[in-house]
Length: 242
Length: 366
Figure 1: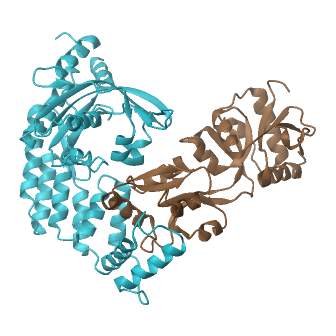
Figure 2 (figure 1 turned 90 degrees about the horizontal axis):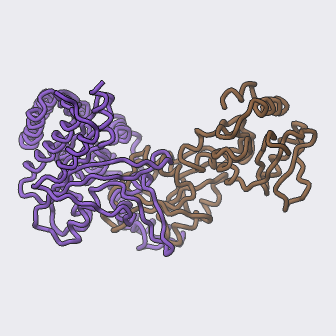
């Protein structure tokens, strides 16, 4: 592997890994992971100029934003969340038709008066007066939440960062409502939470993503174009955006 | 006339903040973050440069001077004593994830017996500061928070609607959404909905219990039921269309101050609202500003307000040739009570962006 190798970040486990390998495999670019699941580097058969690195999906987003890898597969939500304006540091080359999920605002189903974001704005504005503390929103999507709430003119709230099981936060009393990712909505329903009608923050999907921040030499740009043309479905000229 | 050098301008600025009638203060660079987050919420919180101590307490690099000055006024038990504080020094924020350091100067007048005179003193201070940088014709934008609150109160609409509208003041997008909603009311909740308060409280309580939500930890069943009924009532009795139109017209007023205020006077008079007193207040401060800098264009923008709800009375912004904000401030008589003052304490002040003032001075030199 030379300095000039094109570095592709691939999800290191689970369905995202399987689906990514399937997509590349279907383009006759089978990803190999010689060291097995415990190994974090691999390659693509017959593409010696490409290095594959395996990372957790959230880390792929950060590596792409920082330019530590050239290209990668991860959820678009993670790019938007990876840094404020993270999306400005990458090019979304191609949606891959898997990993679909929505980032949504959900409130306890018992809040029958809150059906729209405008209701939430009203509730937030006098929450502190009534309860002596800010309305609390549990989420791991800090940037997306702040931006969405600001667009709705909601300023009177605090974010409680949650690493996992966000949907349990209202019942456990650590937050009043949540912003979370959901594909079927079942987990939310099971926790007696309801998605606000205009509370869709973003539709997310696994994407093939190129980093603008990476160190792009003419040779690497040519390699990128060649690889994208093998994959198909991407108009030529992506490298001119870098 | 010989032009001043940057260091001479800086020297003049230091003399201004150290003049005999004021007390220059220097709050610490590292401050506990929670007062900022408590006061301004997430929207301002995202701009803080944070650091966390090993025991989990968050600190931030000083993002402004107003809060620490107001807080130490209370902490030192100065209530009842008029205070005039000035400052000059760096503040730190992050913008789009990039840390930035700015230099700010400013004046805070707290607990002054004559709030109106205090605001004029603030305007004079800003004017002098601009003069140091040879800026004689800034763009001035005035806003009337107090005027808008008086306007809403005079409109004779329900307190809930007043609150909803007031809450969106200064956020044009959210305000427009609300006005659209008021202009085109959506389908009403109709038929088959329980309307007895007790029934609704029972339904909500059952729902919360089965979801293992605490009945006291967050919004209470009674609170939810009441707001539900209130929402139904408001949908059933919307604001009369002519009042909505008046609101839209009011918020659309942007003009040279005397003309703008005259338009508001005429439209409110036609609608039978008495706004003479709050209009006179804005008029007198606008006149004071014009007297201070005859070459400045003093505009009144009816929809202009900072997004922090502790502002009251008159607010202002002064801009340079390329539209950069050079100075901003106004009255914020709700700040001290927000910070825990037991009685209302008048406060007003302004902040000046001295880096931008210096750039503006260089522009003028060219």
